[in-house]
Amino acid sequence: MTTQFIASRSIVASMLMALFAMTVTGCGSSRYTMVDPPKQPVSNFEVLEIGDFTSALTDQDSQGLAGRFADQLHAAVIKDREKKPGKSIFGDVVRATDRSDKVLRLDGTVISFEKGSRAKRYFIGFGSGKAFCTIQATFTDKANGQQVLKANFDGELSMSFFGGSAEEAVDSVVKAFIDYFSDYFEKGGPSG
Image (tube, rainbow, N blue to C red):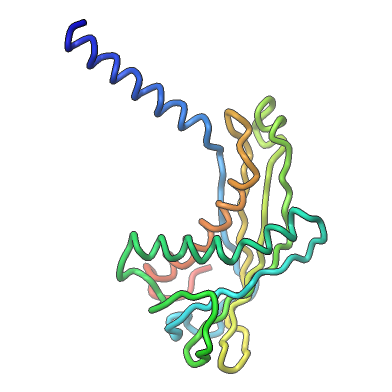
């Protein structure tokens, strides 16, 4: 075999792997909407404390999501901070702290979670069998218990070549939180 033939095969193989990776991932979207806009600047706080999440829904999937979401969000925020050093509203992001001064506490509630139908997303697509998730987050001044803001964070997965996983909708909710924090940092104040 010639060197040119081997190089061509490598390029074709790389392109096929990239195409496969794109078809395996789904078409997800995320957004956040303010329920109660900020009553004071979030930048007044040095620490974000992410509390355990709860579920307003009683099904096992929603309860399971609520049980693991705070850790998933915390890990994503830490990873985002590592990728963008110096571009964070908060000096520290923790799961728990004894400190109360200048601590913004985040408590969340799963208010909707639907795994949808992977088969419908695969065979029909175009929004059929959509997976979605909404978490309502309340941010509270830990020192005085006053609500600072309340927002809904939504994620959905509407289609994917292989149907995608409902977990991609949850990942989109995590992305919505990261987007809010990034937007707030970039604008230097409330966004909504």
